Image (cartoon, rainbow, N blue to C red; front, top):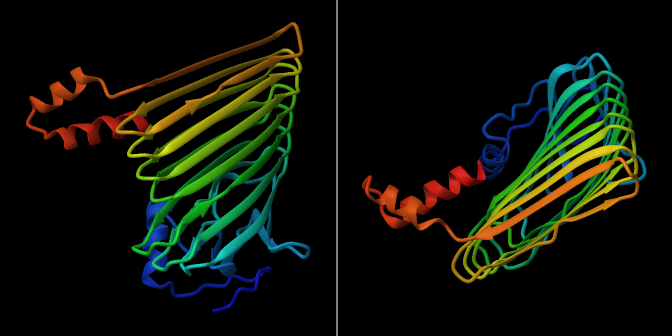
Length: 318
């Protein structure tokens, strides 16, 4: 295996565990072609550039710099992470430099396979520097598996600076297997910049999840839409704290909806703050159990109670 990152593509044969985890976090779409970088157990093991997207290894910290030029139009770059060694603590810093006018899809995500007795953790710090008139879609899915007793922990930090008249779409999902996570998201919006956030989460057992989002609407006519949907099962605990701050003429809407089951605990703390007379910010939050009428309707179609719950949860999260 070669972990060199530069102008030359590096391709490797992946083991079964890595392939299976990648299929989950990248929806069977990852391939060693175009622009990509796969990090496995703290090392970049394969890499490729494209005509408009270049990936370079950092000199000062573990991680990479991704340079996306203004001629990029609808291209996707894949930067997944797989941790499969029990006891591995992986810290990485990835910076994205997106030029004016670029249109790009960035597919990230991390999967932890832990079959041992020690905690495995990935802490990824991603910072986006988005120019003007750009369109960026960032997709991040987190997943945990393995039959060991060691915890699977993910603590992502996402910093996003959006230039004038640009659009940033953030789509995150954590649906299975992660024992503990604390997600920190910080966004700054320029003039007429737009932010769309969709967050989906499901916890079970003794799992704990916390998500904090702060959006600074700095530019005139900037806007933000934050939608969070979650399901809490077992004895799991979830806490959401989205915060929209209107520093200029702007619009923002926060919506948090949660289904609570078993003995789970779900807390939703949406916060809004206006520092300009023309800031219009709305927040909504709802927590409740699965609707009995929906369950009954599906049961009459021949589904068991568990099958009916699964259908309702899937539709709710999607």
